[in-house]
Length: 229
Ligand SMILES: C[S@@+](CC[C@H](N)C(=O)[O-])C[C@H]1O[C@@H](n2cnc3c(N)ncnc32)[C@H](O)[C@@H]1O
Image (cartoon, rainbow, N blue to C red; front, top):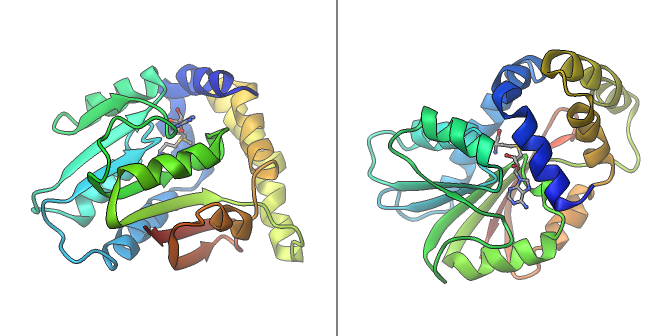
């Protein structure tokens, strides 16, 4: 799939995205986002007046996690996504947050201006990850944080992991296709995990960053990766 195909696919499923996501993930994705926020804030010296860019923000689930994690503290959260329809839903849900149409490889921020970049279940959809990493480096302040929440593939899966993968590769696409009426999108999900990097390969792309924290869930299928510039 090209980058434009991927963006169009998210445009097509935007109005069903939240509903389907809650069902196929059994709601545990909320906890992962909450932990991602908590872990990244450990490496930031202050927690007010932060500029936080949530890249691949989609309908805004990670923005909600930031708002909950930083309640009552004045911070600026900006959601960025190339899918107009996903962004429109996010705009409707978060009236006080700024949003911009944009890609991870072309962010609407000045050099050295952002404290934290989060990208939740988004980096797998970026075709040119190397350029996205360069872009993260450009916009982040010195000591700024990138927090990635993402599925990665396992080259040598355990027996239990094979069961988790069976759910992701076989059952999940069927439920997702049925609920969304979009077979392509929910076939793309397991395929994009299989075609994606391992955790180590993904971290290695951030060669000018320091790995601060790596947490794994779902028998290592889901990763929270905190990197510092
Ligand atoms: C699975 S959704 C994740 C949304 C949200 N972050 C969440 O946690 O639910 C993936 C998002 O990545 C976006 N996306 C696709 N290609 C992208 C790119 N090149 N740069 C930034 N975001 C991209 C899609 O439009 C979609 O909204």
